[in-house]
Image (cartoon, chains in turn purple, yellow):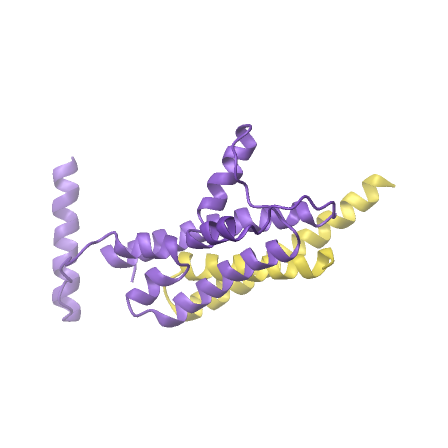
Length: 147
Length: 56
């Protein structure tokens, strides 16, 4: 079953390549580089592959959400006290270098009693998760799953 | 910053990422981005009114 699906997929690639005159791309270099670069620096995975507009828009979105979260006095999760904190910290870690820069710079650590602070913390978590989606998309572009 | 500008910023940023990652061509990205943005903002307004009416 698996073999036949693989054969069909290969036939499809051959037909597409023959019909459109496009040569199938070969995988060269480290395939996971866009994934790691995209995680560490938002949009870098796309920019590495020449998708400048997409990369800059993704960077603006993720950095914009992260910065808005900090402006709203959202906190960066540092310790894992309970399951929700662990999940939020995992989301924060998706921001890559932004998270580590924030931690080392002491951003989002003060206790602020503002009504929007809770939203700010969620903005930072969501920015991290969106950055992971963008990094996986860059990996898909690299492997040819997406054009 | 008040809640509504926060909703707009959140919707814009999330819609852009969804559009770029979930669609292939620029035109389809634009359409999907506008669709997601409208759904985010529309759902926020509708849910806000619902919560307001429930709380009264």
